[in-house]
Length: 534
Image: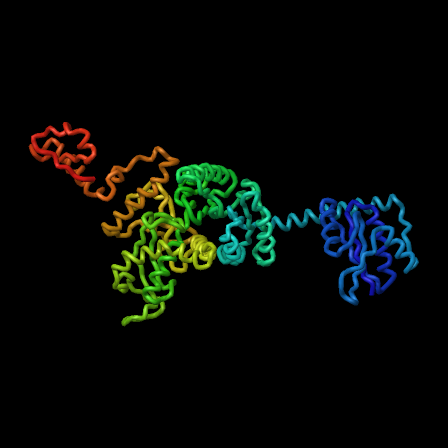
């Protein structure tokens, strides 16, 4: 059996003549088979080059003809072009084409119209599918490599949502992104409709339903001061905010994850975007929360999933300093603990009541949590990208589909709007996920010690914000550091003493020690001033 493949550009009249001759041979010879490939003019050159490279052929114009060795296997045997096939048909089958030039051009025009119609049908078919566009910024980060399978497989958006993935990074990483895109296609997920490598932000954010900002692997220069680094981020995220406003969907979910000033960057996006739903701009603190749960689980000898309702307050960054965050365990529960009292799988008990080691909670637990990232990365000499991707995937799934338990409490970096007397900054707070949204848990009862820690965390976060937002007012408590509560009480006492009902001797003057030395004449009251070291 002879099977021939005839391929050509739709605007080639010689392809039209060969096509008609091949049809004639196929009709008259029962063992002669022909397969025709006609391509638009715009696609022909690239297709021909790829086909010749794959088969080690040399051919430069339309049409091209080869014979498939279907009876013996192996690659096809190149016959050549128009002249070679005409000679082959004449020599082996005694047939030739008498087609006139006018008819050749007529068939060529029909081929052009047929190609245009086919492209139109394909485009209309693609338009029937409206995938959800997901953009990953700094997609050469290893976290993206581990996150994309969860995004494209339906794990996050469900089994009925088609996905389009867009990868954006600096131009110098374009080749790496092309490799990632090829490998994503090789995964062959049924819901994955398209993978695009973008070099333009407008293209990357166009109609995006979700934008995930990962930290750049070479974002911080060693010679940069911290404030210079913050200002660079400020300008970068101002640009992102403007493009997001113009291109992304108004209800797009914007998630920041990684190391560095996540809270700062999220606040910049919130302050400089006008069309986005600002509640949908968040910073992920899920990995910090999971690290805390893992350490607690090791202590309790249960699996990490058995520890729930742990809240990490403050800094969302995966490399957050210990003094920029607070881990709250007052509502934490533990399941599966092998103790005197057991119950079904849903049964849980208060973690604080079961640990019996307050000293560990206030010392080693905090230290080990702060050093866990360095410990892990030191063990295998590369970033903790797998756990960060898993944390992001979990956050997105809970946010979009709802948590498996609507009453479970998680941690999430959001813009504070007065909850727990905190406002004007992005801070990791307790939230619950349900119905495709989240709600801040605003009524947790906190101890005086926890409130003091949160106040310090707020001051620490706002210190960064003041670099780019000078209008943020100084907090009167910040100046006095550890003695802020005492100083506040004294100021209140002084204000009361200066009221019209005060009596002689009730006034309390608060003098900072360094000021007292410079201005010894300032105290002239009958009662001696009380000096307090700040």
